[in-house]
Amino acid sequence: MSKTLLGIWVHTRKPFFGFVKKDDWTGTWHVHVTVAPHRHQANMEIQKECTRLFGASVKIVKGHSSSKKVLDIPLAREKVEQILEQ
Image (cartoon, rainbow, N blue to C red; front, side):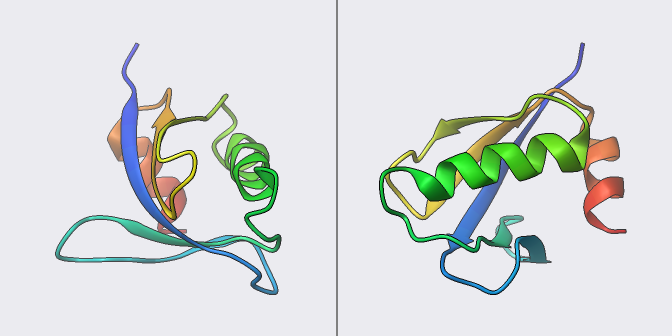
């Protein structure tokens, strides 16, 4: 089973959740979340919405208390990129 480690940069307190743009230089995705980073609410929203978006259980493997995070997605990178670019 292939998996993808995806770097994200989280921006909190935005009006919507979504993967906004990919940084061409680092390959990191900018992600907007609607909640504040209080009591891990942003992490919970990221896991919930990414699991819904990708149709697979997504985990945060690095950056639990940082705005820079790494997600573990149990899908091939090509499939992840295809979903994000829709």
